[in-house]
Length: 134
Image (cartoon, rainbow, N blue to C red; front, side, top):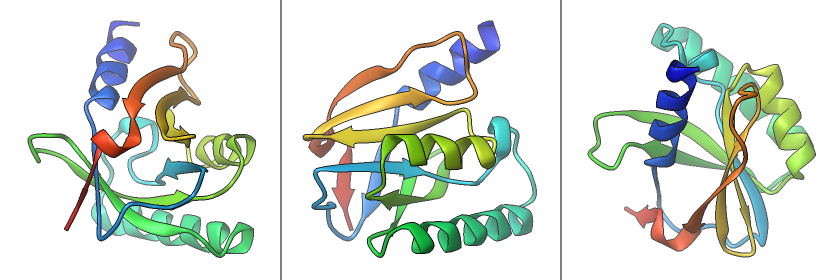
């Protein structure tokens, strides 16, 4: 439980980096990197994310690349913004063994558990406060 709480707290400290902010009313931010937050080798992570990209392209033409990172830049993970339903996003995250996803609805950013059962969805604030453009 303590390990999950520590992970959950770290997921709350996030920034998203991309050329411009997305314009969708609702979207998910998800990745296939590091299943269960266990670091795996980079080539496997890249392959996993390419397979996820392919799945997203079959679901929507609006998927965009985004970098999720710790505010201090100590950690970065390539991810995707996808204008899909929350149900679809959670299904994909479960398939790719992700503990949680980010969900944006009407400008609000939520941290949504997927494989973590001892935490609840948390509103983190306005998405505009978590984005920075390059």
